[in-house]
Amino acid sequence: MPVSRPPLKVVLAVGWIAAVAVAVCSGCIQATPDVVKIGLVAPFEGRYREIGYDVIPAARLAVREWAKQNPEAHLVFEIVAYDDGGDPQSAVEQARRLVMDPQISIVLGHWREDTTAAALPTYAEAGLPVVTFTMAELAHQPGILNLSPDKADYREAVEEWAAAQDISASLLLDCSADLTEIVGQLNSIGEADQDSLIVGGPCWGLGQFYALAGGGAEGLHFVSGAADADDMIGGEWTADRAARFVEGYQERSLGAPPGILAVQAYQGTWLAMAEIADARGIEGFDSPVDELAFGEDGRLMNAPIYLYIWKDGGRELVARLR
Image 1: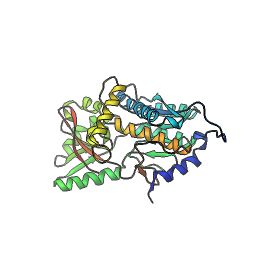
Image 2: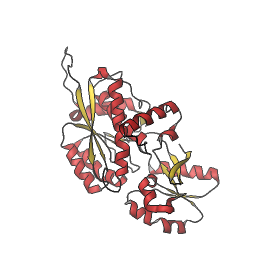
Image 3: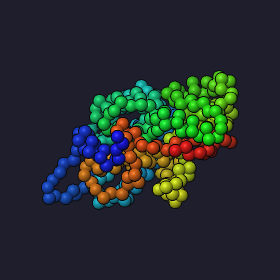
Image 4: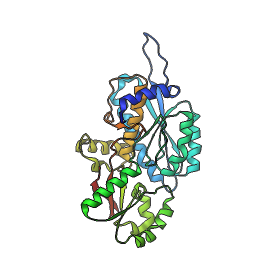
């Protein structure tokens, strides 16, 4: 049965007490802010470094907004970045470092399917909460919040869209392999599915995918649970909000525009901060993720799905499928 985020904080407060415990003094006033560290794990070097440099300005923007909007909370967040290089073995090593640091209260990462799968058991064993982004099915583990659609969601959304367009579509969601292997399969994929529209998984949306594929990526479609800021406009994410996000992001990225993962990182950071604040009994704080609801498996309910095409070297939105 689906649950909304408020009931989830009960699980957080009970299950994660070691990670988010705070001393309470009856009748006294906290003189100095309580500093809480959020571990952000992503590749900052190597083939996948674009991921790290896309997500960290967004995370820092969210932390800055918390400080500005909630000064009375006496709770200060700090982002501590860890580089896993997009490598599963390194992801496990960084996860072990994180669980050994008593100042880390929650983790945001790892952004790739294989690194996430490798690291999650370490966090689960230690009881360290994680906000993650994976389409893989996860065993029920209290403390894991997942902002990604699952594979079944992607398939259903693409099938419905293709049927409405009266076309056939072949969905290739596997993003667990290295991009060089995935790109190397493009020619054989095209020969085998000449009568179908080929739709790749979220990893096809990386700039490195396009660079490795060269001209072979032009015209290819892919689905993603993340989107560029302007492509998300609708509902509470207004044009004004998107513009303010882009402006705030560029102030922290030395002018670089946000990529496709930036808004998802921003939301994930706000979610991490809101969960910690909830577990500490802090009420009345402003948060842009209050409307997010999660199922019993910790996955975001009705997670958005976007269909993109590579066109003239850039990502162009075809449709929001959900």
